[in-house]
Length: 362
Length: 104
Image 1: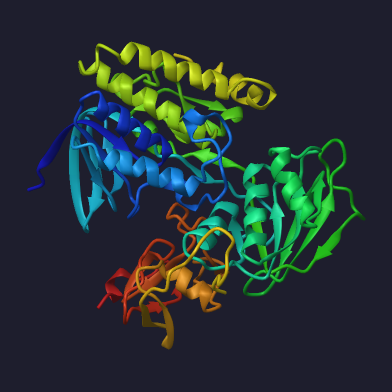
Image 2: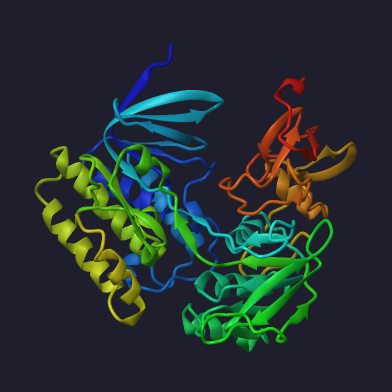
């Protein structure tokens, strides 16, 4: 017989959003169960060796790897949080409100009173001939391989995409002693912060805007790539092809929310390209259209770890408050978190996110 | 393929263990993902696709995409980007979908 465990708040995913949600919900007094498939908490922060921007409240100028450690320590110090590592959530049973997960090779179930989904996002791929050859890796995958496991992906890399991930991972490849042949970007402008672009340029890496990959070459694994230029209508221009001798091609073309659990739970979803794909409709307190199910972080719309942490705090507080916890100071803390989100998303950099979020209010 | 010097990170020496890849003996660090140990040893082809028999490596390295399925100790469809290396493991290139009945 499989017995169903109980908890007040279950949180799926112990990245920046899930850890922050656990900290705020448990600090308010709720009993929290935090589930994560990895051995250690921190999500994708554990591979981010660069220092963060934003304000002091979101750990600006601290490296991602250190933020992961700080948040994990904070959550571990709270006696009312149970952390289940190496626990892979498999599904959500809508009718019973039961979450199923695998841990220690066993199928287990837990029924929470409130659920916070903070599953993050997955890397997108790109369609081009031979895009399945070994040696073509997600940029985040290369970051994991190098910064968590200490293995370089190859000798010479073509980076596809000049958003923040493409730029940052290029710099980290150089730090690990790997050559970066070029960074190509289909858009006419660099998508990431110019600070990151300047760093790789200073080290001699060309950033080619309005260029894309035509195809990869190789028998058993990548041996080279053909790139070509795009015109103002994003159409490739025959005759502009260039051959690059590379043994790795990194794909950094963005992320899509890992929203399967939200679909299973019957949350109303909306396709919002500005937020990376299908995202849940939610209230200002991060509650989805299914009462008691909250979201935080990239699964609610691909953004940055800084806003994921604040959304996590907000969702944790709101879920705890709905159970009757933290009533004296929750309102003030919620307002403060909402103010922080607003300031993180202000200015031209947050324009796209603001446009996206305007479409998902409940 | 291992990083020896890094301006920010240090990679402490871990316990070395032996395992086999398609019958050949290789060495890796205990507890690292099998894919990392293989990559460090220069192995990039992890399986061949079911229909067109095309070589495949890993793609996401965090257990999302299922590009890196291999046969480990007779068990097919193991995501080697997140499966930890243990001493004596028998790792094999997976052909096609893998056969569950073949597990010993």
